[in-house]
Image (cartoon, rainbow, N blue to C red; front, side, top):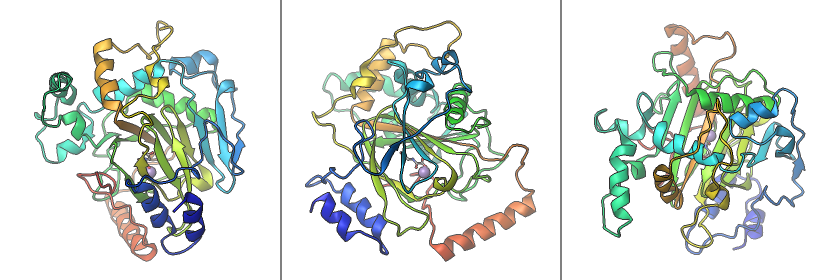
Length: 373
Ligand code: OGA
Ligand code: MN
């Protein structure tokens, strides 16, 4: 079945999203990706150039976060999805390596929380990177070794740590949000027309080549006015963007390394999912933009070049993996978490609305979002 045939079968209907999700998730034979929007060579009626606001942030300021000048970013909108903005890899050559190293070596460290904490002691999960690299280096020698903690990593939470079971954030479970990621997010949001964005929570998802991420809406944040930002590194994924109803037919697009997605306004609460990681065309290869080294490293920038021994591990990992970081503002400016009684009421009404509308994020503490691998 071609993607066009799948598209005609899956117009609207009860399971339109689920059917397309399964279509792209299939591995043998691999699905036809010809209907998937590729923003790095956009030639699709649905895609239009999106005008960003380059005035609020200076070139110097964005370069500190490893980004090109905003006037050079290639940003797109999608007809039918107001508030959805796709920025095709705006990172400066070499700077993705820094962000990848943060995601693999730094952000899984305590006090951040990860899936391994759900069944291991804090002593066991205290140095995921350090405990993994020796084994990874031995793997290079062709030895059979058990899976490392790095390979078992599925999610990390930052800032207000998302509770996968209650689907809430809480003031009692907060650790400082990484300042460089806060700054990157602030700049991207400002360029997209949200100058006051305050990164308060982050979810990192680690995908192996057979991973997927179930159909869900991100609605646990208490204020939905600020956008949701998403940063992708490593292998390409197919992202499905649906509607406000579970049965709205989604649009499929590739998310490549360095791509940034902004879900704002009417697109903030749309159903979405990642059905598959796209097999690299020539086996285990890194996208070329990840192989570039940092050209200059100015004093005072937090973007620094990654030591070669660290990059060896990162590049080995990303040959078969993808990392996605979503950054969220949880509260409106000046808003506080509801008092315990009020928060009880919120939970109640949330559960009711889930039953009523069958909106169920199906997130589990161990596996994070519903996923198969
Ligand atoms: C999420 C999410 C999408 C992705 O973490 O909420 O939707 O591209 N991630 O991994
Ligand atoms: Mn999401």
